[in-house]
Image (cartoon, rainbow, N blue to C red):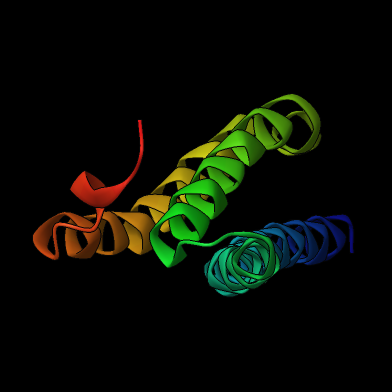
Length: 119
């Protein structure tokens, strides 16, 4: 009976570990999706708000990008400490910002829109 109980406990421990791994995987996937969806939505919100106040669409895009980049400090100081280091929250956030902004800025450069701005 003692041996059978030990086997059951080992199985339960293994099942709990498996559930922990599954839960962690689900949490990381949800965080990645949330960050992936949040960045473009926040950029669009900032861009629209700034476009209403700016005479230049290019200036509004650059200002929105600047504000989005400033959120990295908030993520680093307030959000990242809430998660285990291996969740790499800051890296995920930075990746999504780069994924969004690099093509945006490249398009502005290709259109020569940046060179038309006042210094």
